[in-house]
Length: 93
Image (cartoon, rainbow, N blue to C red; front, side, top):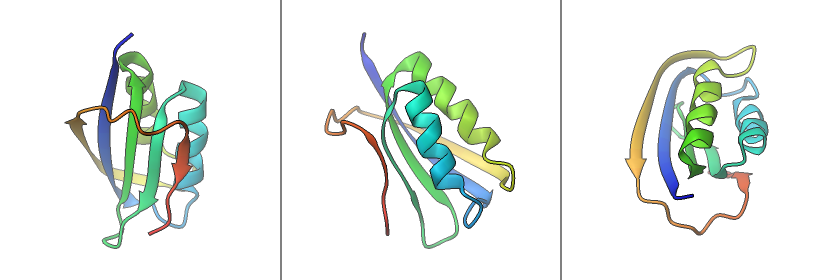
C-alpha cells in the first residue's frame, strides 16, 4: 500500500490544552508516523505519513482535538512522503 503524507497547521486554542499528547495518541491509534509540535505563532503543526485511509482518520481526530481545545481552522497541505519517520513524536521547538 502506497504511503501518503500531509502537513497540518491547526489554529485556535490548541496550546496548553494537551493537544500534542492527544495527537500522539491519535497517531498511534491510526498507525501513522511523523511529528507534532507547537509553533511560536500559537498554532500546532503536525506531519503524518501512512496509508491514505489512516492519514484521513488521523486528520478527523486532529479536527476534533482534545476536550479543552477549540479548533478554529485547520490547514491541510499535501507533501511527498519522506520515509524517514518510524514512529510519531512530540517535537520541542
